[in-house]
Each structure stands twice: as structure tokens, then as C-alpha cells.
Image 1 (cartoon, rainbow over the protein chains, first blue to last red):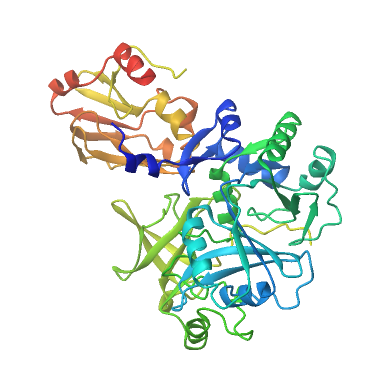
Image 2 (image 1 turned 90 degrees about the vertical axis):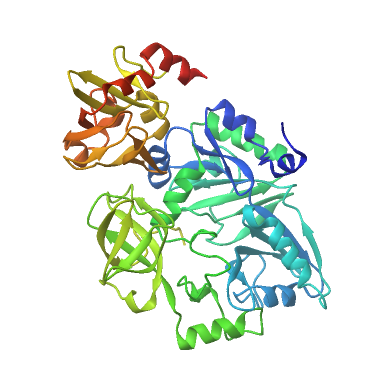
Length: 366
Length: 126
């Protein structure tokens, strides 16, 4: 018997759900949605994006529009990056933080026009972010709209993405620079992604997204699931909210200080983040490489001299380098590169050393 | 359709046992390797370790997750398949050829709790 409560908790489906099922995808819940994890296999899809091109359904992502006289001033207040006097078409990555510096979410801010912004937020945080944004809009002349249910979204990623966008979808985008956006009618196209490769994201109506998906699959573009989205972003050191950024992990702790502009006008969390930056943080996000093939997973304990000093946030046996590596939040005292630390993996303890948290070079087209 | 071998005993957690005398050879089924995807690491126990029916004795890791291995029968580990340490992908290539451990069975009556190939085949299609 299904209770009403359970029905409410039921995962949503994106506008491409039936297509994933037809392609035989393995489907799992993620961020409140039933999402495709893999089609042909994580390794194969990962390789397709690194070497050629792949397409992802990322319709689960949330979108919020911010418009009005105070739109820029309002975003400056809730967002850590500095969008002052930004040219139209520019995109900024940054965070919304709590007063104590903890991260509410990491997001993209698209400047669509003067006083007109498009914010892209994480699926799992849509309700929380939406409440947070409304709560902090007091005193600003802004119109906020949660348009998450309207927009479908796909990401075309990989070295051949520009070619595929132009020839298969007929969307001219060679002139589109990294982290910029343009609109073609109601369709929003940006040169962005979450894989460390060149790529594009398209936000549009459900019907348009469905037709793009069909054209790409028909043209032989590899459908890619969230499984390889995670291995791809992890390898290039991009954070995932919930793992590397949380309400307890500030962007300074996560090593994302370049997206926190402490010298701009006041914003929520500034004081706490400034203090973390100047006085240092108790815990830091680091990379760890193991000598063995055992895989450190989220939540596994990091040890030094037999004592717990932190936890793994994400770990994999990487597909590009054949090494077991992870990101972990550990006591800053042990965060220096080269420090020997240990990770408890089930019943055994494995030696590793602190390395840069980037295990593969990004290949953006800038 | 996942391959099921005749003459083996199967557990609900998708391990198989081949019994010769008092020796049990244990591996994971074709269904399991297929569900896991690319196996990238096999966490093996050591020779002389005691394993207990229904208890975890190691793990198989795919790219996406670690899955515990459960002993279908109790016994003492007499051999581990060391080839899997450097070539875990063998499990994907042939899950029945590439066994994981061999044990000296401590209670052959436990085999009655396991499924035969026909029952397991039905179990997998449920």
C-alpha cells in the first residue's frame, strides 16, 4: 500500500524519461528525479566525451529568472562572485552562502540583459534555493520566477561538440566564447558544462529539447548518463554539491576562493568567509592518491597516526589514469601536498598521499 | 539474458558455489557482473580467513559503487584468485570461469539453503 506521503516523495521524471527507457538506460533516483545513470556503460560514455562527443539529459537542473530594477544589486547580495558591470551574455560561476559561510548551493548566473538574469541551480536544491532567494529578496525591486518545470536542458559535451551543434542541430555557436550565452528565439545556448571538455548547454521548451535529443541520437551521438557525468567532473576537480560543497563546507574550505569576491559590495556570508580566508580554516578539501587499487568512496574515514582526520567526499578508480584517487575534507594541518595519510576501506587501511585535486587536465576552448 | 550454469548452487545475493568433495569454489554470477558494469577492483579475503554463510567476505567494485560479497556457505578460505588483483575485469569476461575464493566447507548441509540453476534462473527474471 502506498501512502499519500510516499506518493509526494516520488521522484519526478524529465521530459526525456521515455527516451531513456527506450534506450535501455539504467535509471536511478538523483536529486528528486528518476535519472539515467548509464546507457552503454560509464567507461565507454566517459571516453566518448573525452575523445569525441556525448549528450546528457540535465533537465533536472533548476532555473530561476531574476528581473527588475534591483536585479543586479540583489544577485550581488546573494551570490559570492562579482557581476558588477558585466557585459550582456556573460556567465558567472559562484555560490550562495549562509551567514556562517556554509554553502546553500553552487550555481551559474547568466546575464541575459540589463536587469535580466537566468540562474541555474542544482536539482536537489531547487526547493531550498527558491525559499532562500525569496526570503532574501526583501527590500529589492525584483521579480523572481522559478521556471524549473518549464525548461528542459541537454548538455552536448566533448571536443566534437561544436561540430555536432552546428551540423546536427543547426545551431551556430562557433563564435560563442567559453562561459557566454546567446538566445535564438526562446532557446538559450551557452558554452558551459560539467565535464572539463569543450561543450554546450541548451535550455528550451520540452518539445524543442525532445527534438534535439532525437536528432543527436539519430546522428550517432553517444547518450551519456549521470554516472560518467560524475567521473568526468571529478577527474577535473569540479565540486558536486552534497559532496564537496555543503551547508557545512564553505567555498573557502573547498578551495574555491577565486569565486568568492571578498572585495565587492556586501553579500550574505562575506564576514565569515573573509575571516576564513584571513585566519585560515580548520578543514580543507584535498586530493589523495592511493598506492593500491582499492577505491575510496564518499564517507570513508581518512586517518593519520591512527586517528580520524576527515572524510572522503568523492572517490574513484579514475578512467583516464588507472589510479585510485579521491577528494577528501581533512584537518588543514595535514593538507600540505605530499603528506602521507591513510584511508579506511572496509576492514583494511590503505596508504595514500595528498595531491592536487585535479586528476586530469581540462580542455576548454577559450 | 544472463548466463546461468548448471550444476552450481546459487545465493539470492548472486554468488555461486561449485562443490567438489569438501571444497567449495565461490564466484559471482553473470547476472551480478552484468548489473555491476565494469569491475575495477576485487577486495579479496586472505587464506585461512573464516567465512560464514550470509556474511560479507569481500567486495567487488565497479566504477559506480562498491558491492559487498556474501559467502553462500561457511568455511575456511584455502585459496583466493590472485589473478583478480591485477585483472579485476576478468569477472566481466567470464564470471563462472573466474572464481573469487575457494573454501573448505564447514557445513555441507548449508547447500540445501541455496538455489539450483533452474530456481536461480527464475529468481533472476522476477
